[in-house]
Image 1 (cartoon, rainbow, N blue to C red):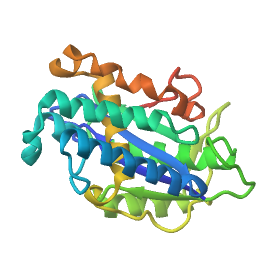
Image 2 (image 1 turned 30 degrees about the vertical axis):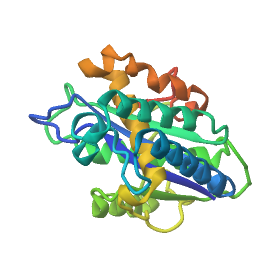
Image 3 (image 1 turned 180 degrees about the vertical axis):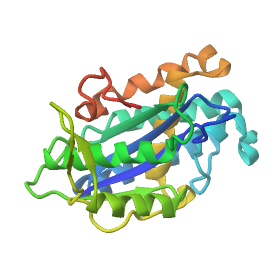
Length: 253
C-alpha cells in the first residue's frame, strides 16, 4: 500500500486573495519504506533540536516559520530558513519517495471556480492513475492500493469528494469529444485527517508545498536568500508521470 501525505500552501480563495497561486502537494511513501523514512525524519528533528533548539514537539509550518514564527521567534530567521532547507535536503535523500504537485494559477479563473476542489480532484486522479500503472518510486505490486492522510483542513469537503470520485469521475476522452467515467477504485477507506502538529510527514508535505509556492512567486526575503531554488533539490522525487508534458511533472490548472 502507498500512503499519500498531503498539505498545501497559498490561499484557496479566488477573489481578493493575497496569493496568486495555490499549491497542493502529496508525499507518497510505500508502507514498506514508511518506518525507515519516518525514523530518518525523527533523526533530522533531533539534529534541528541540538543545533537550533527546535523541540521535537514543535511544528514545522514553513510559511509561519518564516513570517509568523510565534514562540519560534527565539530562533533567528536565517536559522529558521536553514531548517527548511535541511528538511528539503533530507527528503531529497529518500530514493523511494515520490511527490505529486498541483498548482492552481487563480489569475483569470472564472467566478465560481472552486480552487480547493479542482486541486484535490487533480491530486486524487494522479495518485490513483500512478498507482494503477505502478509508476511510483519503491515497491511495485500488481494490486497496490492507496491511502490518503491529509492535514485536517476542509475535511468534510475532501472526504465527500473522494466518495464521489469512487462512483463518478468523468475524464475527457483524449481524442474526440465526450467523457469516460473512470471510477477511483484503488483507494482504501476515507482519507484519514490529522492535525499537522502531530504528523512529521504532513509537515514534510507542507515544506514541499511551501517550496513550490516560493519557486513560483518568491517573497523578497526568499529571493534574497536564493531559497526559491530549494524546490529544485527534489528533482529526483518529482512524480513526472503526473504531468508528462511539464518538465517537473507539476499539474498546472
